[in-house]
Image 1 (cartoon, helix red, strand yellow):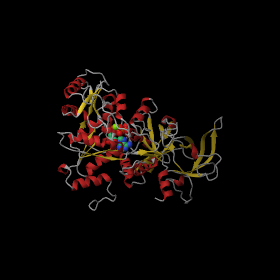
Image 2 (image 1 turned 120 degrees about the horizontal axis):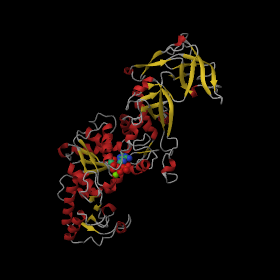
Image 3 (image 1 turned 120 degrees about the vertical axis):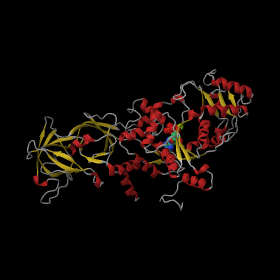
Image 4 (image 1 turned 60 degrees about the vertical axis):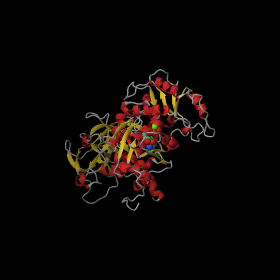
Length: 564
Ligand code: ATP
Ligand code: MG
């Protein structure tokens, strides 16, 4: 620890790596990690943690991190997923360089190893059905039983395995199993399956294979072939470690990688299982994997989260060996912290109420300078147009003000952000009694938002000029689930979907400058929240903005309460 410059103590993986480096246990002193997603869905926030750990450690110790697509289940895998995975990792700012691998690249080698195991009497072809196999496997407290096929002669095993490969046997009829120990206390060591028959077209190998290697066989050997030094995965693989070590110690495998497990990232209110996320997509509970409410990397990107904020979040969560649930508000806190520093401040009126400034000349337009970001002195200013007709938020006016209401009401004076002081003088209503316009007068001497005589006003409203503003669609996103632990109460997470997770405002008005915003820009609509341009639906003649998050900082409040 004494030779690290960082303030935070080393996490357990860093300790292991530094110890291995110090003791010469790392070939050439080069740390090699890998990020091994299965291309059966889009990456989610949990994966960000794994990406940051694997790419982060490689970077910190001057090594490399491979991207390995773990494509051993052709039925569920798709090129679309592979492309999205790459895009997401790049968006996070990581790069695997030339080290792009596919488990399917090793099918020939894996097959040869399997044949060798058969020849050495270490693997056999089993004809037990899946159900029977389960029965024979035993339980956590009872040992398993040997399959009647366990002692099948080597020659017959070789012939059957060859026939499996040639497609002569139907799915489920045979599997190739390792001959380890049916009485092992670890169920994963009770003659694990190495190969199964599957007639499916693989996204990369097409119809070349109809037998596919199992994860516990493929993964360790892929790691060994690539020279991975530290194979880092989540805790649920801890029980698989003996199978990992078994596979990497097969005769003829030269490099021996080691597996280490850390606690996966869980966040309350979010579901992070590709299976469940796929269900939401397929059944139209969301508009796709990149729906801004999805906890996917593409979802949060479209929602307006920055990669920096997510890396900060993951680093605050830390790396541990104990499972826990992280608070959603910590994640939003990190998003706000980052966006506060970089988001361009703009004015948008989401629920417009017309204000007519009676003493302001008809047809006149004035321009005010609005700061782009008060947190960033270098961010400059932009122009906002002011005229006789402006919109303010409907909730910023009250005909009969309640006690403590400091915004606009008849006889009260407020500041229009960056512009003038105005005082309301009257209202117009439609037949139903709804207010359709407010009349006001302005003080020409309060240009820029301060009065000449130094009189103070308590309220400041944002506004846009009716004749200059651009009509826009604003999508107010909120959490997809309303329960902290979706599904916990009824057993069905669909019961906890938040009916208000998306509220679409068709007729919002944004200041002209907002029309220049591009996809990927970070925006703050003053007093309304952080926003971004929707990457899919926004067009020049129909702007669409997504709410990234509100301005309210509940985590900061919570922290203050807890005294941290
Ligand atoms: P899911 O359970 O969501 O379907 P998975 O584990 O099947 O995810 P993989 O594509 O196999 O998804 O994951 C790639 C890597 O990301 C693995 O090393 C896995 O351990 C890690 N990972 C997956 N989910 C999380 C998580 N919530 N937190 C941290 N790492 C994760
Ligand atoms: Mg998996």
